Image (cartoon, rainbow, N blue to C red; front, side, top):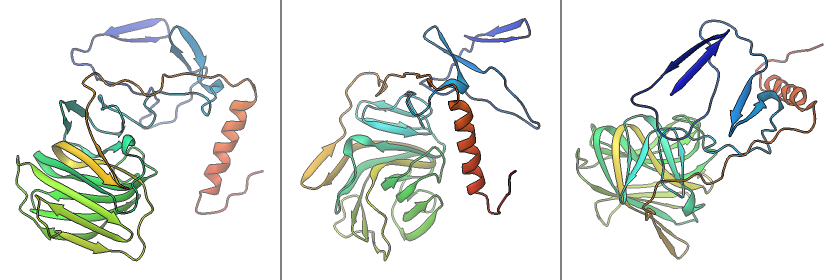
Length: 286
């Protein structure tokens, strides 16, 4: 049920196919400037002026996550991820990520493995040593190990808020077939295995390896399923076992209003200064 009120006029509509899951409100403009005065948000019957909210102390459920339900112990960065039994599915989109919080930071020599099946599209696989993740195809740092269905190959690359291919090898990848994919990171060495073959398809060494980070799943333009997901390392094995119930927010949302009436102005000044420092040229402000 959607409602809009403007200058005494109201409009209500019902969406027969509403979006699922949690999300964030926002503001958008098309082709011109806009000024919003007195912007407020209502939560549980309480009204808050957005400028007065202390964003450092407030908790917003699903921060940096968007889309449908995700399994407990995972963090979603874009995409429509769902769980059915032990299978994790994602619809065809450009670069959504699902990080396995429960597995923690991968120790040196750790490996991630899972059965992967591409049902539509081209590219899907794992991401490893992930740091600084955000919504967006290249908004993160880490390794990507993916099946390329159309080209029938395995690819290893890095993301440092960009994309760089490190290795590419032919592999018998087939649409609709479950492939057992495994990737291991040990120092500056990354090995990639598929379908139980003892010899790695990819054995790549780097002079400047990435720092340790999280493990997760990623797709690029493919509808894909994962099952039997596990991480092994440091003498332990963690296997994904869904709880069998609807996912819940890890932290209940809570909005905290800043007790300092000058805080909104201070925050605006901080953002302005940050913008200036990130410009490519110096700007003098009187």
